[in-house]
Image (cartoon, rainbow, N blue to C red):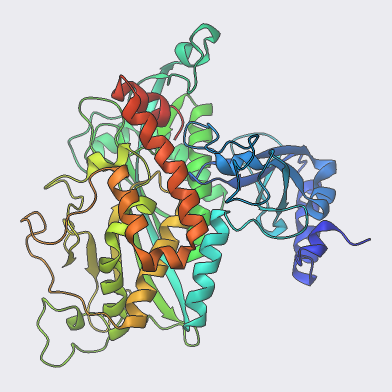
Length: 492
C-alpha cells in the first residue's frame, strides 16, 4: 500500500533524497526530538513534537492535527460552531473537528540552535482523503506565485522588520495559576535601551546581549541577515534581510519571528512583533516589504529600465520604472485599501497610520519617500530597482502579505494601469485615505471584487469572519489597553 505522502503526490526522487539527508542529520547530530511546525492564519507556528525515531514514518504518513486550529481567532477561540448543524456549512471537511494530516517537507529540516538535540521541519495540512487544505495560508501564496509564473515572472523580496525587545523582570502574573486567564497576562518587563537616539552606537552597545542572540539565532538557521539596527523607539530594533525569492522570504519571516522569541525568552528577554506595545512612550513598528519582479527566463529585474520614458518627468513612474513596473505599482495603489487587512491584520496595528511618523496615511507613492505608502527605490540602469511597501506591520502573516502584493500587482499588469504622479507631500491630504481600523479594512477587502476573486470568495469569507471576531471582542472589551496587552503583547 502506498504511503499518504505518495497519495498526495509528494513522493519523488527529490523528496526521497531530502528525507535521507534529514535522517542522516538527525542521526549524526544526536537529535532526540523533531518539531513538526505549521503556520496558522495569524502567522504563528503551531505543531507537534515527535521523538526522532518517529520522524521517517511521520514524513510518510503525516501527523494528525486537529482541524479547529485553522478556525481560531487571535485569542485561540474557535470562530465557527463546529459541533452545531450547519456551523461549518461553508467549510466542507471541518464539521465536528476532525483531524487533518500535516505533511512536512524534509528539505526544510533544521537543528534548532536555542535548545538541545531538537530538529524542526515545516509542514502543510491535508485532508484525510489526500486533498490539500486550500485555506492554508502557505498554499494561498503558492497559488499566487503560480499565477505570477504563468505570466512569465517570479518575485524577489527583501525584508526590513522592526520589533521590540524587553528584559523580563518576572513572569509571576503570566505563570500564576490564580491569575490564569484567556489570554494570559504578559510578563513584567524593562527596556533594553531608552530610545529616541536613532542608530546610536551607545544604545547598540547597551542592547548588545539580546542583539547577539538574535544574530546568532538567525545565522544558525541560515537566514540571510544583513544588519541589526537601533530604531527610534525605546527598546525598538530592526532586522534587515537580503533579498530572496518570495516563498523563501515568507518562510524566513515565519521562522525568524518564532526563533527570536524562543531564543530570547530562554535568555530572559521578551520579544514582541506587535505593532504598538502597551506603554505610554513607544514608536510603532512596521514591516517594510521590498519587492520586484524578475523575468522568469532571463532573471533580469523586470522593474528596471535603461533610460527614462520619452518626455517623462521625475514625478512620473516611467521616469524610473519599466512599463511592467509602473503597471505593478498602479495595481498596488488600486488595491491598497483592499489589501490593508492582509498587511496590517490586528486591531493594534492601525495606531501606526499617523502623520509624520514614517508610516503611511494615504494611498500614494513617492520617489525614495519614506512618508508615502509605496516608495520607489533605484534608478535607470539599476538592477536593484524595486518598490517598497510600507503599509505592513510585523505581526502580519507573511504568506498573505506577499500574496496580496502579487494579486494586486498582476491586476495592474493585466489591465495596464498607469500610476498617478509621485507625491512630494505624503501627509498633505492628497490621495485616498488608508483604513483607520481593522473593521474598515475588512469592509474594504469585502468590497474589492478583483482582489476577492484572486484570493477566492471562500478564503475571503473565512479570513474576514475570523478577523471580525477579533474586532468584535476588542469593541466589547471594557479595558482596551488590557485587551491588547493580553491579546498581542503576551503572544505575538
